[in-house]
Length: 263
Image 1 (cartoon, rainbow, N blue to C red):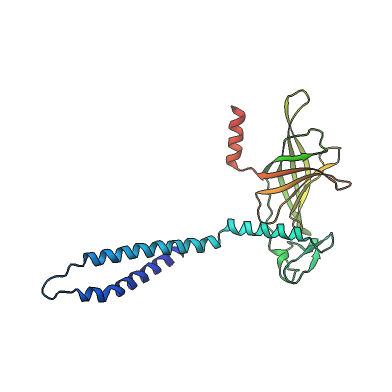
Image 2 (tube, rainbow, N blue to C red; image 1 turned 60 degrees about the horizontal axis):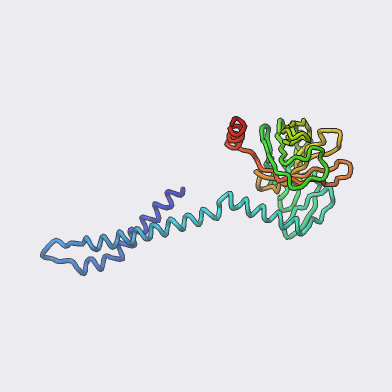
């Protein structure tokens, strides 16, 4: 479609350029000898090159406005603003947003039926994690974990969606911890855990894998699926006692990580 649009524009430009220079060419026509219009055609070529460049830039600007990465950044910014403004619905409700704020039950989000008048409850329903996904994060601060790691991660082993509650897929995964022991030796553990993802909050939760009652939660924004804001929290009180900035690990990142360990 884009190539066709460019071709049509170029044909129109050629027609315009030739028509525009026609009087000029006729003015210099000599009846007695074959006219030499090389300089005229060179001028037309120059104009065509200039107009082609301008058309290319115009198409580039149009593409930029529908660039998925730009749309994603705009969506993420919108969510940040909404969080600063605060939500006006109940704890177990979803705020539809828009000029006519509306609250619906969390259980109705991403269930295949539009419950919000504006349909927003069915718009951001792509699960950000699937089986095999791996996230790693840098610990920003930590007031509670016994290993006091500098880095943490989590990986998703399986995802299951129940027909009765499609808006809360169930997860199985591992909490990954790299740490340095009291003796200075490096250690790592993979702690099996179960959990869920809530579309109504764009929040992933892995329940406490150990007896200390510390669970892991990661807050997505519904647009950028490659990073989330992680928290370690006491499951009983909900008190947050550590913060982690998580980033998705790609296949290239995994290869670099393996090469680093092999060296």
